[in-house]
Length: 220
Figure 1 (cartoon, rainbow, N blue to C red):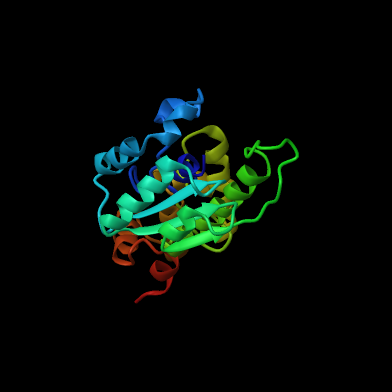
Figure 2: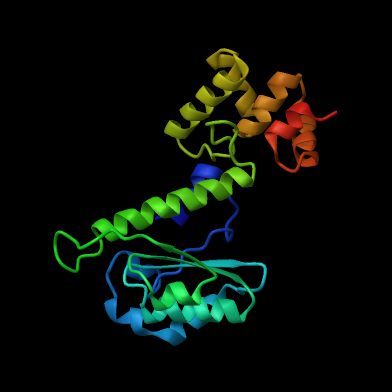
């Protein structure tokens, strides 16, 4: 869920954050519990993504011992990638296999063994923190604003207009017109308005600043 949400929220390119689920994409809709024991499938999934030393893998399992996830972590480490684990037990095999381990002691579930409850909720919070921090470091935000958001529907287009008005002080009509000229890209619209640039010049300046709106606004 967190991986899927990152693309519209932060405008990340396809393939930057890839969710790998035991049983494949279909298991997101229909549980495939036996798939979590398939270690070969985990290795094959990483190989299909051409995982290498420039990549990072975060393995997630409440028990910290799921064979699929553990095999993926070990394979990723063998390929030279950075590995992390988010688990809900102490001293688990996954925590031992990962370079960075986050152990969240969420305690016994109200319904015994139903780790979709406390364990699953705390894992989602940890992933929110991780992905949001990465997006901040990748210049996908400006203050509290997600300025690389893809305005792909009416709700997000209204949000884009609010961001531009909040960051520039112009009225909604001006913000909307500038967004249209900038292909609904908030960063470009803000840069164009605040520095009085045409969209193509704003795009070039943003590229020269490495995608950082803050740097683009202040550099010579």
